[in-house]
Amino acid sequence: MMQSIPYGKQTIDESDIEAVVQALKSDFLTQGPTVQLFEEKFAAYVGAKYAVACANGTAALHLSALALEVKPGQKIITTPITFAASANGMMYCGAMVEFVDIDPETYLIDLAQVEQKLRAAKPGTYAGIVPVDFTGLPVNTEHLRKLADEFGLWIIEDACHAPGGYFTNSSGKQILCGSGIYSELSCFSFHPVKHIACGEGGMITTNSEALYRKLIQLRTHGISRENMPAESGGWFHEMQVLGYNYRLPDLNCALGISQLKKADTGLARRKEIAKKYDQAFAGNSKITHQKQPENFSNAYHLYVIETDNRKALYDFLKTKNIHTQVHYIPVHLHPYYQSLGWKAGDFPNAENYYSRCLTLPLYPALTDEEQTYVINHVLEFVNG
Picture 1: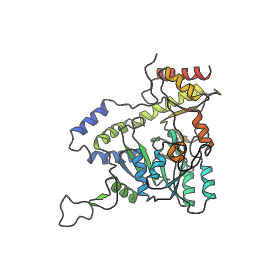
Picture 2: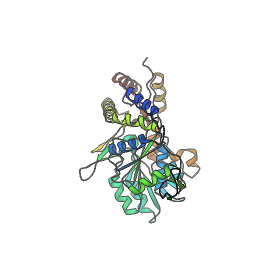
Picture 3: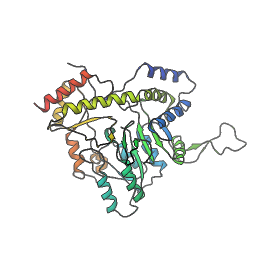
C-alpha cells in the first residue's frame, strides 16, 4: 500500500532551513530588518504598494477590520463557505456578520445575490464586505468594487488561499489577488498547508499609505515612537490607540522570504496537479468540481470535488492511506453562529455543497505516482 498521502503539506528544503539558521544567528529574532524585507518582497509579488506582516491570517483579518474602524453593530457581508476566521475577524470588533449564499458552480459568494441584498436594504445598512477567494479562485472584485462604491462599502479581500491567483478585468489587465486594485485591504495566510509556509504567519496588503500606517501601529500594541519630545532618548514610545501584539518574528519572515522564491514553481506544480484531476474526472457524471470562469486563474490551494456518498468515499480513501478533508462546514451552521439566529436551510447552495464536497490531495511535493493512486481509488469507489 502507498505511504500516507495528506490532503496538504508544506515543502521545506535545505535553502529554507539555511534561511532560518541565518536568522537564528542574526542579532534579531523578532522586530528586526527581515520583517520589512519580507513585507517588501511580498508586496512586489502581489503587485501592491504596501504589506504588513502579522501573526497569522486571522490576525490579518482582525487588524484589517480595526484599521477600517469597524464598529459594534455594523453589518458586514461574507460567504458561509470559508474558514470561520473570515467572519470572526469582523465579530472581534463587535460587527454583525450576515452571509450571502454561494454560486453552486464556482463555490464563491454569489455577487448577484449580494447586489439583491444591498438593493433590498436601506441605504447605509452595510459597512463592508469580505469576499473569499475560495480554493484560490479569485472573486470578481472589479464587479464587486462597482457595488461597493454605489452602496458605500469597503472591501477586505480574503486571499488566504490565493497568492498568485488572478483574473483579467474588463480592460484586459490581469488583476492579481491582493494587488489592492479594487480592495481597500487584502489578507493572506502562511499556515503550513498554504502556498507559502512560515509555520504560522499572515500578511495584509494595501495601496493606501494611511491604512498601512494604521496597521503598523495596531500590530504592535498601538505604540508609536513618533512625536518624541526633545528631552527624551531612545527609550521613548507612547501608546496612542488600543492595539495588539500581532507581530511576526524574523524567524518566520526568513522562512517566508525563502519560500517566496519558490512560489511561482509551486504554483505551476499546483496547476499541473489540478489539470490532471480535471482530465481524470472529465465526463464522469458522478463527480463534479469547481468551475473556473473564462479569464480567471485559480491558485489552487485546494482541489475540491462533489460526489454522492461523500462520507463513504472519505472513509474508503482513508483505508488506502489517502487523507482527504472537507472545506468547509458552513460558518452559519457552527453552534456559535446558530446561537445568533442562523439555521440550517438559510443558504441552500452552501449546504448542498457541504453535503457533497471533498478536498483531494494537492501540494507541490505530490508525485505523479501518488496522484494516479488517488485518482484510481476515487474512480474505483464512485464507479463501483
